[in-house]
Length: 274
Image 1 (cartoon, helix red, strand yellow):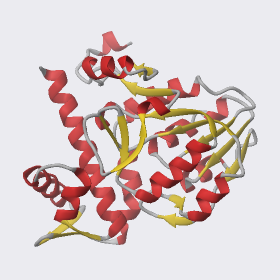
Image 2 (cartoon, one colour; image 1 turned 90 degrees about the vertical axis):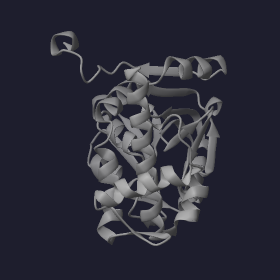
Image 3 (cartoon, helix red, strand yellow; image 1 turned 30 degrees about the horizontal axis):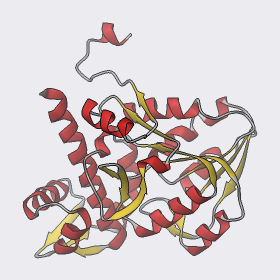
Image 4 (cartoon, one colour; image 1 turned 120 degrees about the vertical axis):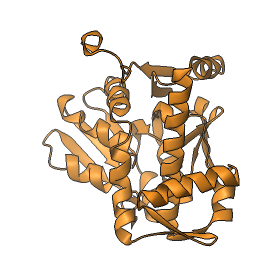
């Protein structure tokens, strides 16, 4: 029973983060719009909004929800970077094993890709394409990495460059492997709450010979309005051992090439974790 409860808590946390990202991206939204965007009940949305308001992240005024300041939007990426750290470390350890020296890889704007970027200098000479300002800043000075930063309109919520310029610049490139993430997995499909991010991710997918989706187990069982891709569109899906066995079996039965990082349980004795 406990693993199911834990999985439910992780999914709830991911959904609230997705709600926060959506509100910060738009500044002010109607609760009715959020209900359509995230396809959940009014009671569940009220609980999510109350939790976010209690943390000082949003303000609920009547039927509207607003961010408290521009600083909230700027900090959204940092909030996500502090979530599911062990899961992201395990996932990116597997992802790094798929990269060979001399490859041209693409990293999307996700915090999981940020974790992966920290492993690249140990691999050797690489060309890295990204629309993430944070990743560009982190790896830009490495002598072994040739950086191609995609331009476009800067979005502080995601610390990324988006829009037509970003999407068009991708079309002149050929990428060996794309590593990317998303905010929600529902059934056998990947979803995201932001249309501009979906366009950028889709543009990268179109130009990659191999596509790898990195998504921690918190994000399964939740949804957002915008469909990104089917899980079978990826050459590999990497997640962690928090994923339920039933979900894993259903994915593999549908032909999804699944890789699972073994993450020690939080209540496992240290001697067993060694």
